[in-house]
Image (cartoon, rainbow, N blue to C red; front, side):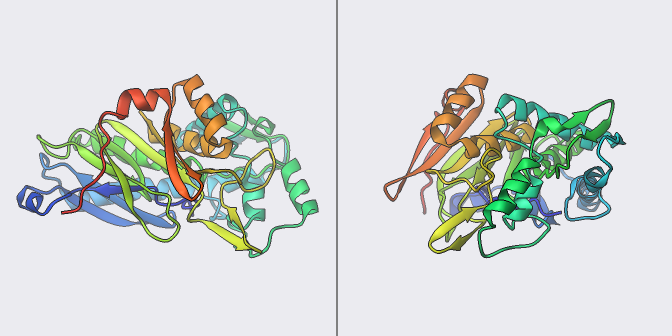
Length: 343
């Protein structure tokens, strides 16, 4: 499965100065999944058996891939996508839960988040059908757009029924679920102080050390290199971002982002470059970040305030980047953020 349609918006910051290198350091395990990296970092109060932890983490991640990938013909999700219309398909509890969250955010966002957008994602070259270098023809776009609509998918008692030929793509939410699943596994085995990072999607639990919180860097939306713009200390929260500035193609001077508007069928084309959402769970933060990015800074900010979503919007303004916070983000996080210093 390839969930890395977006960019690495959040960079883990474990140490900011040379003097900190003498302190006890957390232990980490790293690997690759979903077409991106993962890093699981355990706080200094624990002494984990890393081989056992690694085995458990990989078991969880591989199961998410088996259930929710659009890149695997044998995935449960693709069984749903290829089932006859009107036929109810029984699915595992994990996939059903993610589909429920997707439907919930779709309703609340007025369709700005829509998991049935897979046909359009493929058409624009950001899905399993492969990359493209030219924008699709209008007739193709209209055909795929007619197949989009989250209300064409009916959720029953652990069953999924498609009532139109929609292609469900969970790239905008499944990575967040995977972050939550790994975090919950670590809690279950007693490693309550940890930070899970899958492709820049993060969930922090407990503390890095008894004296120090986990810290993440919010990246400036720069096309060519990663630059930490602000540091945010975090504890018992998920922070996820969505942006338009790394996964795209250009044609005749026009940049086509991987983020598709389910209403127009076209890549977003507004000033908003990135959205970062902080929430109790990564799965909700993931879906909301996508929805708010689709809407743009004005509509997105209004919707975030309406539903109490903690969101930071970074938008382009005459060659510079400016930011605006939702009311909840400002209340809960503004006082903690600071600009990093280089020593």
